[in-house]
Each structure stands twice: as C-alpha cells, then as structure tokens.
Image 1 (tube, one colour):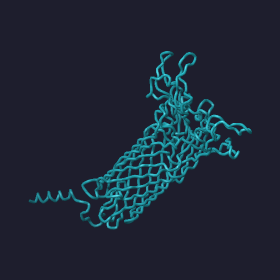
Image 2 (cartoon, rainbow, N blue to C red; image 1 turned 180 degrees about the vertical axis):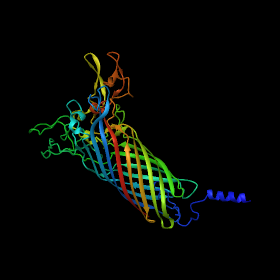
Image 3 (cartoon, one colour; image 1 turned 60 degrees about the vertical axis):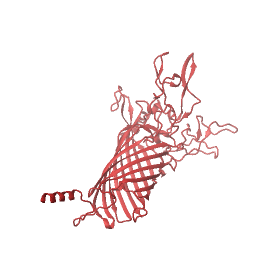
Image 4 (cartoon, rainbow, N blue to C red; image 1 turned 90 degrees about the horizontal axis):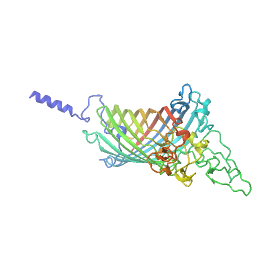
Length: 510
C-alpha cells in the first residue's frame, strides 16, 4: 500500500503542470511563448481581436578585406608558378541606419497577418587602402594592360529609402499554451515587394564633367550613368556626342543622365519559415529554418535573365538554420509583466548567384573600356578565308556590365543576444545586438563558357577544343564574362568579413 502511494506521488510530480500552485517567490508561467513563436490571434474566447504595432531602430556596421588573385612573381604574392589570392586591394566599410516598422493583425485563433516595411535612413560605403594598396593601384586594380578599373579611395553615394514592403501570414499549428503536452510550432509565408528605386552603380568621388546636355547646353554631373552609356556622357551607345556643330546630327540615344542611386535590391522575394519552441519552467529552447527566394525585376540592373550562355542568371538563394534559448528570470502573470533574455545562433547558406557585392559601385561605375563595352549575347557561323569561323552575332542583344557580379557560394554565421521587458498588457521593449562573420568567397566568379550547350561549333566562339578540322564545342560563350575581373588570376575575393548589429524596438499591443 505504501509503495502504491509513493508511485502515485512520483507520477504526479512527473506530469505536474506549470499552472499548479507555486512556492513563495516563484514566478508564474505566462501563456505567451518566446518572441520568435508568438502569433497574434482573434476570436479567442474573450479576446476578439489582436493588433501589435512595432517601431524599431537598427544600426549595422560591416567591414571586410578585398583581395585579388595574382600570379606575379613578387614577395608576399606568388612565385609565378601558381595563382594566389592574397594580393591586397582595399578595405571595405559599410554603415547602415534602418527604421523597422511592423504591424501584426490577428485573423483567427493562432493565425495572423503581418506587414513589415524596413526604411533605410542612411547607407554609406567606402573603399580605402589595405596595407599600402593605394600606392600600387596600377597593379592591384589593373583591368587590361595599362587600364585601371577604379581608384582608391572610393566612396559610394549615400542611399536612403524604403528597402521593401513585406506581407506575410503566420499560423501556429500547435500551441503549448493550449495543450501543455505539445510545443509551439509556427509556420509562415512572406512576400517581399520592391516599392522604391533599385540600386544602381554610382561614383560619389569628384564628378566627371564631360557630358553634354542638348536641352540646356550644359555639362551635367554623371554619378550614376546608365550601363549602356559607354562614354559616361549621357548618351546610350559607343559614340560620344560632343557638342554638335549647327546642323550636325548626333548619333546615339540620349539617356536620363544621372539616375537615382536607389536603395532596394530590385527583386521580388518569397520567404518560407518555420519555428518550434518548448517552454520548460524558466527556459524555452527553440529552433527553426527559413528560406529566401528572390526573383529579379525588369526595372533593376540585373539584366536579361534568359541569356543562354549565362551559367547563373538569378540572385542567390538563402537558407538559414537557427536555434536559441529564451530565458525567463522574472514574470508576473496577472500583471502581464516579464523579463526575457534571448540567446541565438543562425547559420545561413548563400548559394552562388548574381548579387550586389562589396565592389558593386566601384566596378559598375568604372570608366575601364573592358567593362564599359558590351558583350554580344550569342555567336554565329560565317565563312572566313575559306573556313567556317564562329564570330559574334552583331544582331544579338548587347549585354552591358552593370556592376552586379556572380558571387561564389558561402556561409554567413551570426550570434545574437537580446533583452525584452514587457511592462504590462499593452507595452513591450526589446534591446539587442548581434555579431556575424562571413566566409571568404570570390565576388567576380563568372565562367567563360557555359558547358550545358555543346555540339554547335557555330555558336561555340572560343569554347572549343581540338585542332583544325577536329574541333569540338565545349559550350557557348557566357555574355556576362569579363576577362579582366573573371579570368582565373584576375578574380576579386572578400576575406575577413564581419558585421555588428544593434537594435531597439518598442511594441504596443491591443
């Protein structure tokens, strides 16, 4: 009999709920889960409607070292027998101030619609000398022989505006607050839409004054020229329309001249996410996954996405795995007050893709002819000197360099900590910081040939092997390939990249 009583007592302890009476001084468990799995709801008992408005300020600082491949026989670079990627180019710095706005609207029980709109108040980037690289610019920044891609120091224009508009839905398919035997499990879907000018390569250094404006007969400043403006003079095409004589005909099409630097990514994105948390007395461990898919808009400088020769013609895909621990050292349930500490690690895989790199502005606004002149989208077969030759098809589309480059796959890793104080039923504050590092990777990673198309010698260009009469196509030329920055031994690389984020959010809950 005594043994049965003891077993019953033991079982009652093992299934004890958080709602049972507490010892003096022991905090009560609130129904709300960790911040990451909270979902506004509606028509839930006496709570017919939930609305949460959040306003936050965030600052980010990023720095990285940019290096370049070289086969120069020079101490500290290479012995000339192999390609090294340790030639110092520049130090990159970026600072961003952002206003984060969010509204969560309860639709039904554990189902919410939310809207987010990050507003970039200020984004500034610069490139400076790295270990004396400014004194060797003719070497470290060489394009073709005798050609310099850009100059150090280099400063990008200050950018500001709406980063994107996000509309999403969250749904908790399980809730520990409703059933203590289950965790809280949230699924969500978010769409991100471009509502402001996309980013364009610009140069904020001393302005060029060689552009002719036929409307005002003046010399406007071109900081953000159109990619088709080869001569950086306000005209689309290869010919320069110097101030014409009376009656002279100007060849070329006048562009808009100075474009806005833009601030958005120029994409439409879809994010999927799922998070699970489980409250165990004073701690709540959680984990989750999210994936971001981006699709370039026609208004952006990503260019044509249907070029056959392109190996990569889309922005990178990003997949993130995260896990963390929410610690609740103090809470008073009946007054809706509590303090939580959140510790989180997130690891993101960034696939190879065309992206805005640390050299986007510097290369995209370059005066170097090897970057300014267009490539043609395809090749064709012609008879030259009694032999069939593969030459560019002058009637195919012209592909201009915009500064957006093929970026190698890499990983991003971030540790964060935040403090949340819920002052009552209607007000909540969150303060946090994060430190992240980015795996070293090439940022000019295009390949010369696309091997997915073989067999057609007429379209192969230089993508072929074998001697005369025995040639075989190994692919077709990639129109995005630029020898001066993409050839092995000339590629740029980002190393020692790190960033710090800090934020403060305030939420009002109705």
